[in-house]
Length: 508
Image (cartoon, rainbow, N blue to C red; front, side, top):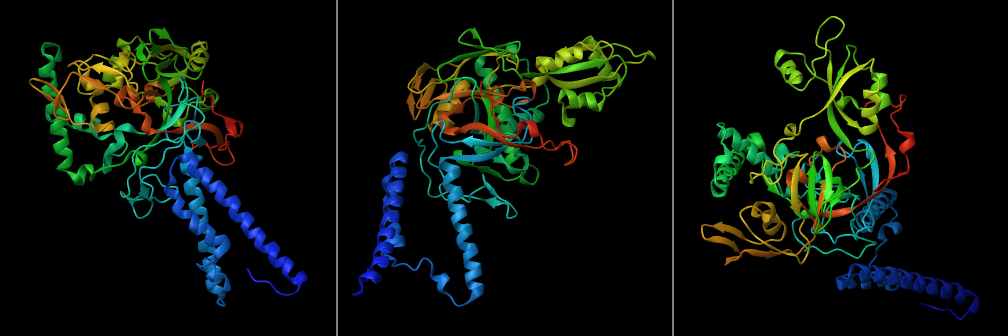
């Protein structure tokens, strides 16, 4: 700091110098508090650079401001602003909140397709990223270039900063898709394991009577399906795409409702949720699929709008002979005024929507809930249980520090937790179970796990299909719908759902 012999001239320079020190102290204190919060003192290497920016000014950070070339000043001012914005967004997205758009109907009518959410990272505590070197505002792929938006190295282990609370029963939660660790790029909407089992079934089309087989024989059949499907996928990249793996924080973001906490025993009986033997009240907007047969006329678009059923969910079933026979077996055999089979719709309905339709006797003849068998195979795919999406379990949800006895009946349920999520080598040999080369029949879990399901129960690929959500996959808690767009409507025809703007997310 330079001074003259004139006190009047020295005073502004002294004030300016004090101002720089005050700014440096404030910024440094805030930065140290941030390092204390995330419990990582590696960030201290940044402090000398903060000192240089405000005090020593050895590095010419703003060299471009002194350039006589107006083009250089103009371009660099934009570069400076963009870099600052990207860095700010990077830290805000990791540690505070991020924007999330609802892509599917799995949580309707609690959250709608086209809702834009603010997701709080501090509600459950933000995670230190596994892959810290990444492009902000991208999940795993760079647009246009269609390549990875992150670097595999450095890779940091799971660590969660202290937040305001923990996941609770009934919370709507954003999390990384657990089964998204392995992806066939041409089938990214389906997890690799389900895809492999399905393709394996196609290789061996003759059905196997599982009831007549022992557990060991059943396991051999499922291993045959999976290995056959896996080899088919890997050997046909032109059909299935390249098979890649993704770290936890780069897997797809999902949003569901937490229906089971660590240590809970969960069961579904005819679609009704029970936790530890106690019936849990259903969310107000819980939906199931129904077959709705009218008395003859079609349901009008105005009525669909009044009910809140999107065009994607307005499925009018074909009236071919095979389909009519199936519907008739469910009691949907009403005739219209001309003696022809009355139209049948396949619709997701809340209890309120069901009551509205069933009370309209002039329009609706019969309503039948979609059978559970329509849901397909459920988790675990390699265990014969006879469970369905409506009648599931009971299944115990792993808790950190809890120890279980491993058996042939429960090993398929927990093997993915042991291997994929907690990093052990699991083998099932003829003489027993081996974990990391040691024979054992017990395992102690190192993480908490959660059970997540959608409120649109028959249109939700959730834990019933791919299992538990480990604690290191939990991203955050949606707090606010800040924008909602209806893709079925135009900009001058109600596209913006004004009644949903800045609406708090119902987490009960």
